[in-house]
Length: 490
Image (cartoon, rainbow, N blue to C red):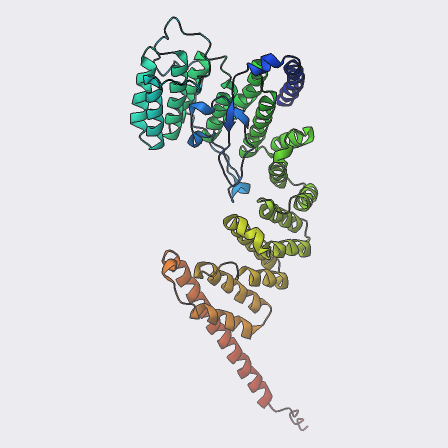
């Protein structure tokens, strides 16, 4: 049913957007009369979600701090995302149809146009009292004075004012609730906004924001329904800026795929990401979408597909900020197919990456270098492939000069030398640990470092005892008589 709905929406989008584009070309006057729209950017994140569009009719209602929240994403540990659990106690409050309007709004004067219009920002007169109050509330929100901001905005909503002032105040009040970690209240206010202004050109953006809040709360089913509503709402409004609504539809599709990924429905997520890429509607964000597709596939058992797509990604986007994660996923897939040598090569390539790339995002690169090296080297060591494990451990030690990082790596290196019966190198490595001085910033890791130091001392002493025992054994055997005992006389 989900797939059928998705295909129907895509077909409907293609027909409606094509007809709207034709109407826009043949009627230039109508295009010039369309509502002005300003740019809205998605918040910066390590796993950036594609921008909503070049334009956004709600931009005048908020500031850059009110950007749409984006989940997941590319947090370094995103590949092990645990699906959020929905707050079942709040579900009854989240229904748009059953929830009463949470904010009292006074009726606008009779002369006010019933259709909410975008305020004319080009007027030369001074701002009205309501505009001044809304701007004050916005500043209070930015200063985290949420109580003051809510009180100011409620005053605007209770006063007799033009619908445009009520619209701006209501949206700003939703942002106050959202910033104040009150997602249920924010959802209710946004639902009231859509109830009062159903024909507002910013309705698709409101629905998108609702979906993101639902997803943040772990209510993934409602989140997906809101993202579908974004697409149908964008098609119904059919306003002048076709490119904007095309990008908005792609954004909604991407968020549906992202929600399935966060819900651990990796098959669905991979299918949706693949559809978006196949349609060719997101070329400017193709690298990010390809990365998310590879992430989804990597959770499945199809290692061949993961390897193929990861290799293609690294060839096409070698300087992508997602490159270290993709190389880690490639190394892991190769290791799962028992291609140890190929896996080790990918890890070493990651550890020896050009400094120019590392400097672009050192925190992300260091995370994936550490994780890839640790996981692959430990697997190789457990499987008895000590030579390949040793090569990775030696490279890992140079990534970070702190004792909290180097001491555990050195200890593991000493263990590998013991397995290879290179006793002197093992002894030297354990001595290196004992000689390492504590640094002021190592106080938080003091218990762990103290434990490793004690273990290194014990292992060094044990090796010394073993060596001494072997020498004594050799000396004993060398002094034994080699002549055969005399034969017994009959």
